[in-house]
Image (cartoon, rainbow over all chains, first blue to last red; front, side, top):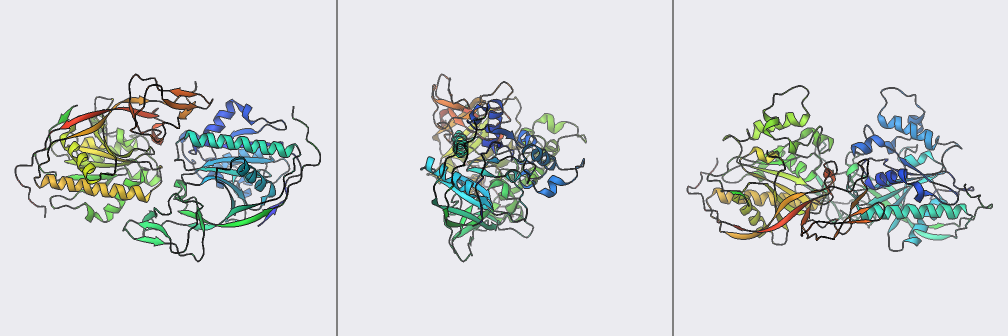
Length: 319
Length: 319
């Protein structure tokens, strides 16, 4: 496990972002609501800034217009010279980098909370890119303690590229908050309320940290991304089957070698050929068909999280 | 209730259509599968023709490219002169009208079965435009008898315009088969298998009819569309709330005056103000946000369906 130390300064510059994918409706409508009525995002030591990340895709109710915005925050894109032919999301990534970054600099925001939905039955999932901070683990633990009946998993998402590319990689620290299942383009009241309450808890946690509270050590389960599994395909690249009923909706549950993972249109089953138990995540996520991902494989690991000491000097209260 | 008599000739020219909406994946993948392997669609007296209705939208995994294809089969569109600026779906509707129609002529197909999915929790629903045929009611009853554990509702869909506009209106008779819930862009194995089995049963029913079988009278429940209810809106047209948790997923269940229908982002509930019980359908369907429809209201009616006598002359067996 690779972790970074917790921040040693209060988090003053915090952004809560919706609509990074324009058809993931909880974040879209929370961001729109808070842009009009930002009072809920205020705490004593900071006021989180609401951001609607991809206005064009949100207006079109599509994930993106030209390319996936949440894969576009690489330094290569951010530092390349602008041209009139740039994809919409490349231009938008540069704008967001100016607003919330610049990435990798002292001027960058302290924390970005990026709100996502999935069609998969993930429940609540905190996604943190590796290397992630002890702060993010304490944040997840805080949510678990606040919501004992809610599965709230921590997923360590190792990027396959060398370079981070997500929106939250622009800030000094951040997470994606993923809640499912919700169809693209649909706003469910239950998930909307759940996400709203979790954002409130996350801001409360940041406030406690800013006020100098110390957080004791604890043990927790975490999930670490191992790789992706594509759908079965025909010779022309089309689907030859889909996720097996016994895997569908079973995100984060153990998948053993020999368990069925796909049912072919011919009626045959495809079995999992791994040599150890894995934990599937994002099972049958609509947006991942084009990425050739039927589900991600993860491993479940037990981690001992060190205590996070209180900030030495109490922060001043924001005016 | 307005019904038309049953056809008096065998149904020889039958089409099974998927991808009328390009992100409703059961029909898309069934049509693609049957285009390669049409054997399942053969019966003794006919061979149903598989059709992928909107190839461009299917390739883009969108409902449509320029306008909703399933609202485009009016005589106004079909008979208007083609121009280079025509929306893609207008051009495609004319092509399908040539293939399966022309609408309103003796040359038109005998029956179109159009396959749809919804994000709403409808279960299985047969949609038949008014005036519908006694044949369609017997077909629905046959499916109910074949699948006693499956809710299989009949929805009489009165078009708000004077003119019919759906794909199946091109043929002499037809239905839409709607199955939900399934997110747009996702293929669930359970719903795929269910739709495939229902199509097989529908073709079996047509075969029995073609072979001269008589069907006795029966009683059944039907649902008749009354109108639509929009989401609560802000002054700028955005959403002010969404479907109430007590209505979400409760398609075809009674909604009484005073029951909650929406939860506003402010936390308040909006109650149903009708003066009698209605039966909501297509509750929180993703594609209907842009149509300003949060759900359809329907009434539940008890109908006595007359017997459908056997065709007088046995059909010849197709070679």
